[in-house]
Image (cartoon, rainbow, N blue to C red; front, side, top):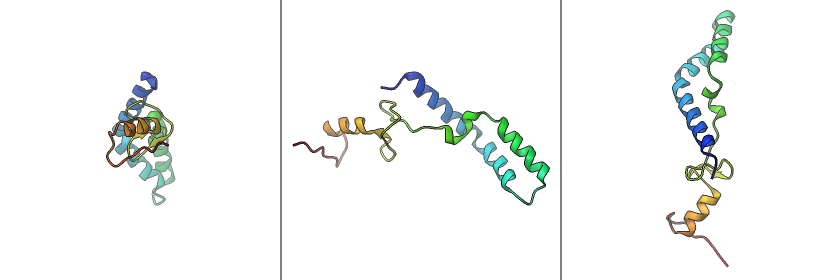
Length: 101
C-alpha cells in the first residue's frame, strides 16, 4: 500500500490539471501559432510558465486505484499487477483464470 500522502498528492495534481486545462491549451495555441507577432507569443509563453507546475498533465503518474502502487500498472484495468493477481485468484475479474501448476 502506498503512502496516503502520495495518493492524495496525485489527486491534487489531477484536480489542478483539470482546472487549468482550458487556460493552458489556449496559451499553448498562441505560442505555437507562427502567424502571431513574436512579442505576443513570448508573453503567452511567460504566462504559461507562471501557471502552477502541477497543472501540467506530464506531472501525473498512473497509480493503482486499490493500493496506490505506481509501478506495474495496467491502464485498461487501472490496477497494478499485484492487485490483478489477487482479484483473479478470488474470481473477481470475469474471464480471467489464474493458472497454477
